[in-house]
Image (cartoon, rainbow, N blue to C red):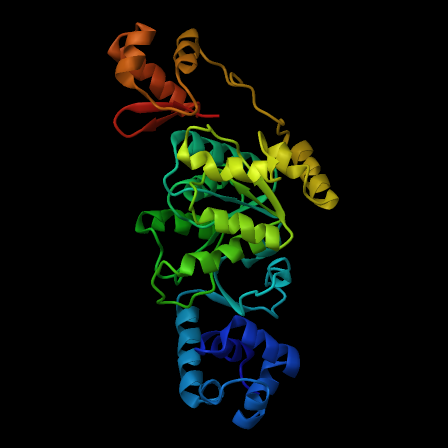
Length: 373
């Protein structure tokens, strides 16, 4: 008997077989051991091209798979087959689940109740702020956040979950040793400590454009529902929402300004029946009853309020004044704040620093400031 993980790595890597072809073989033979104990002739009779069958059973292909497994072990990457008990039960329900998942971090997150938050890479301050707040609230109530580690909305969703000290799953369109974009490498390491980073692509795989639509089915497949925050007309995140619908999962959307091109996707999906989301409760109330009860128990145990009021922390009059001058959907430059607040430069900078410490304000590049939800 061969190593079943090596068997699955071969099935996942043989060109011309494909994920669905491999699943058909598994359905027919019932085990990977039986597949590799068969002959080229037997596989050919089942509709597998002879050249593919020969490659599947070749020693060269097995040696490559064994080398890959060794590399994964050296890099503390766990390889989960679709028959492993730790493999996501939800993901196994989709039409074409990955044969293997490469995982760094806690694989237990893959079977925790999760919601995907996805959207534009070219997000507006409103979208970033909204995604962070929504992810922070959901993660704070025990919901795992899944997304794609991309720039914009994906990064904001992971960041919000991490701020809440909750769990988050990052699904890559590359090998786990090729974090993309590179500026998110540090975030990926943080996610490994507070969730997991996963991919169906083996170590060494570059982040090619065609990989990302493929990985999107994993983001939605791991999740009970997908929430679209911002997406232009041809955004890849619209693929994730469509896949969620095809997988019989919930689809949610955050409404946006009708004059903004990044609002096209969410507003269109709301018009077509996706649930409009104004707060985390709008998502939780659509989840299975057992999950809703779990969230309620989490809220009682942690003392979390359903919605934090704007001035929930003690603020000085100067801090309240400055906070009221800031918007959640558009950054304000410090020169404008100086004019409107009538404070001195040193006084205003001191107030803004205090508001940042109290997590009421976020500073953007160029001395621009945004009020946090």
